[in-house]
Length: 580
Image 1: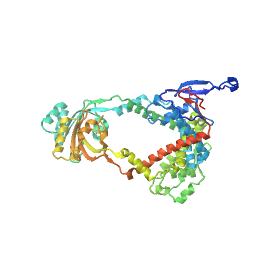
Image 2: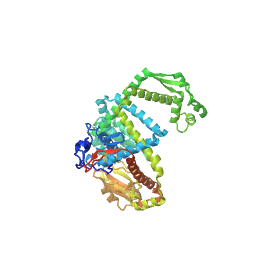
Image 3: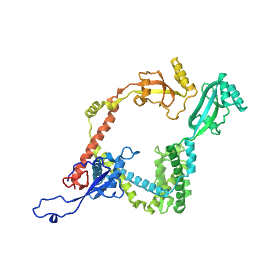
Image 4: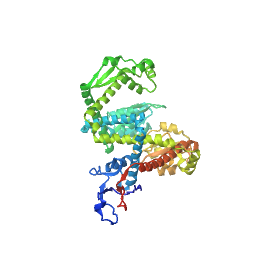
């Protein structure tokens, strides 16, 4: 067998070699030089549905088809959100990995790993979950989202208010302006007068905000207003002193946002699907379910562990789903799994309520109902379902083989760990990090004023608490600094240059391209440094184990290819000899 690695780089389609039968006796006369059998060359798209069942390789009696190879490529692709770049795929290399996987799975079965209880449990749970999901998808396949409901949710998601606001420190100043506006005074004129009198504490002009960016009391008031209306005084409580705010709603905006519309559609669709499935479950329940409610309500779990263990073996039937039974023991064992810290503790803390017990029983009945209905529809016999289950079985067996067979044989010495650490020190060098905070304003003059106050010795925390007109979190393109340090390299280049050389306690003034004006405060600086070996030893160990495991997998693949029948039909160009 020719086991050379076959490279098929840069092909959107690939070539299959199918041997034609040409008996030696009729193909050539006696003494004639031996010729290769003729070949049929087929070039097909890798994602072709028409050719998805064509074999690219055979492992023992199992065919690996075009569809199998494409599914493996998609499952292995790291960037699941983007389309697979077919032109950059090395098909031969990926087929080689797929063949190795198939060989190791077969060896796992030969070793009896498929009989391990933990393996069986994983597969059983997946089979049932997949079966139920397939049924639910079938029931809800024709469900459509109500576009009116989508529009309502979408508009709430994208809603923006363009507002003006003025705030006062003294309630009497706010009331004087409020009265003037009620008597017909123009809002601008009232603001101008208050400004000239020095009554305004702060003023924000023509800002666009999301409802969620505002304080709940302010958002609640604006939600009842129409464009052009002015609010009554809104009293806001602060640590230092209350503030009195008056807001004018200039405009309600609904900007286009395709992602938000899709999210709104999905919310409506999911809700509708739940309604459909709930009704379907109710119909099945009326037809197939009988519950002994008296027995169920008589169960008492405020008892000792010994008594609970007895209940876990109780054969009395709580519910019938067709011919299937849920016993007191079944229910008790399911309930025990819900309370990891023990049933006695849960009982003492009052967590085993009747409502929770009812919810669990409904869940158990619902899953069994859907399982039986799926089997009645023979979903478990469908090719797509069987293919999904088989793929998962292969994944579990391959993973189990690595954990049970390969990893226990891997030995990593202290010297190997330190050698890797020394050769890859750049991987364990922490880059420079900064712990930053900020005050962000729309008005540059106001930002300069705050910045000058910091230079004069004002405390940053006090200024952040008391400065009016700050941009709300969540505003578009706003830089947000978390409480944890940030990588200096991930900051905008223009900001990095401004922060360069900054020390703890320094402040910098920064105007972003988006028009925001930041007072950046440096709370802490963490210089670039090499992590201690002791701190990264576990990470290095995991990397070396992974590298050795990969090598061991390849070696197992080579060994098993010698022992099992493997044929490969995929190749890049016409070979000089037959590959079989």
